[in-house]
Length: 78
Image (cartoon, rainbow, N blue to C red; front, side, top):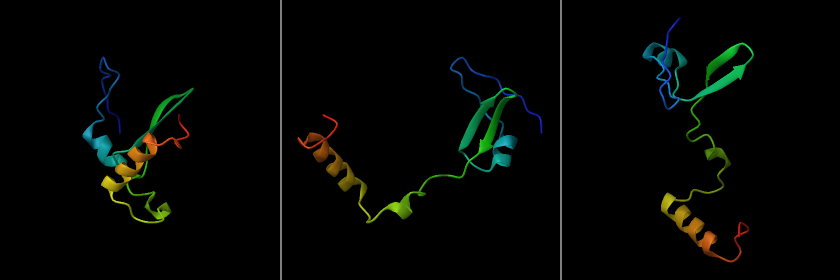
């Protein structure tokens, strides 16, 4: 398959629909080497870390915990 894509002034390209369909995913890896640049499909990572979660925490609760940790004196970032 041979397609041409224009690089915008912001450095963005639009991947033609036929190429996106062939990739089968919306997540790609760009690999630059001495021969040029390759685009390789990656599996969607949404939910891929779920198996590492020990317990479910609702998003609102996780945000609250994060805010409390950031405001505490025990936060190692400060």
